Image 1 (cartoon, rainbow, N blue to C red):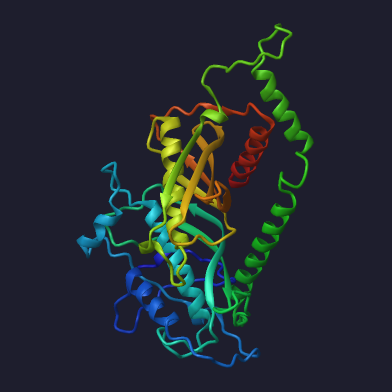
Image 2 (cartoon, rainbow, N blue to C red):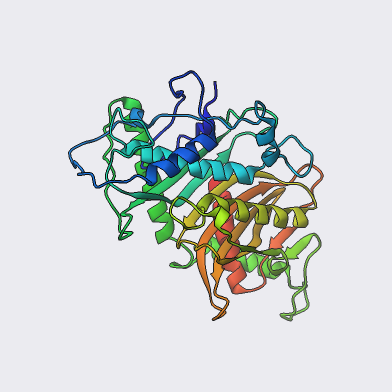
Amino acid sequence: MLKLLNISPFIRRLSTTVTNNGNGKLPTILDLREAMFKHVSTFADIEFDPNKSHPPSASRTSCIIPLKSEPDFQIRYLNASGHPRARFGLLLEDLDTFAVWLAFRHNQELGKEMGKPAHHPMLIVTASVDKIEMKNKVIRHDLDIIIDVLTAKFVMVSQDPKTRKSVRNTPLLLETEEDKENFQRGELAKNTRIARESNSLLRTLPTNEEKGILHQLFLKTIKEGSHTFQRHLPPNHIWMQDAKLKNSIICFPVKQNLYGKIFGGFIMRAAFETAFANVAIISKSRPHILEVDNIMFKNPVEVGSLLLLNSRVCYSTGNLMQTSVDCSVFDIKTGDAKITNTFQFTFEADEDGEVPTVIPRTYEDGILYLDGRRHAENRV
């Protein structure tokens, strides 16, 4: 029996377990996507009872990614290397779809099937993804996916379809000790996000330890006894400014979401694949993704936009590489670019990989280095 994405996602602190659709067969991820299009296209004005609450069990569901049972479906997930590893970028798209589905299902009136809304009109979008942790390096593309090799924590936002202002979700009814524990984990994750934002290097000074690290990195680039500020690159090191890769994508209508904007899962896939290529070039290997963290959806991306992706390996140690990706919408007429998304990816080079030590040359790169180091240290 499949547990899709044992993601235990804290979609407003919701979790998932295995169920089926009543006929003994799990719906596919495409079934859910089609059902959601139908669901949001039939909104009616429904009075919202603020006293109602739904337990986490009401939203528990599962679905299948039929890679073995449906060969035509499998080809989309084939890895370019020929290795039986499914395309992780597409799994990110599926995770995002599933997260939205669970959020809608939580708000749906108890006992009512999805497809005909029994809740007040709302749009549900991904605000951020706290963390996606890989517990296994290989998710095979030739088996129906039973994913209990990763954990993902999504944060969703519900909006009024007309005003795009926030609307209230159905409160959670905590029935069991497990429900209470999961809720507390969600609260901890929320507080961690707030603390991380408050202590961001864009807001506060580096710590004394971090200042010392930057100075030691600087000294590594100065020839001993030269008594000059002329800098050089030590062996097996690379300047951060040379550890970058840029990509550009035209956002066609085929990638729009339920609400006519570009699907967040598609942006996640594009960012991941750009970061993967970046790391592969630097390490001369096919790296493994270990963790996705700190995905922020700051602004929607319109259909027809030119999306610019800027990836850089900002920290490396051993065979581990921390990579940040910024996504910006480029205005062709004005030449201005506005940040829409930010990502952090942690990769591990394969056994034959050669990972040079990334070293900053400017103060800006130094701050990026420290931020990447924080993410890598937090993972450990």
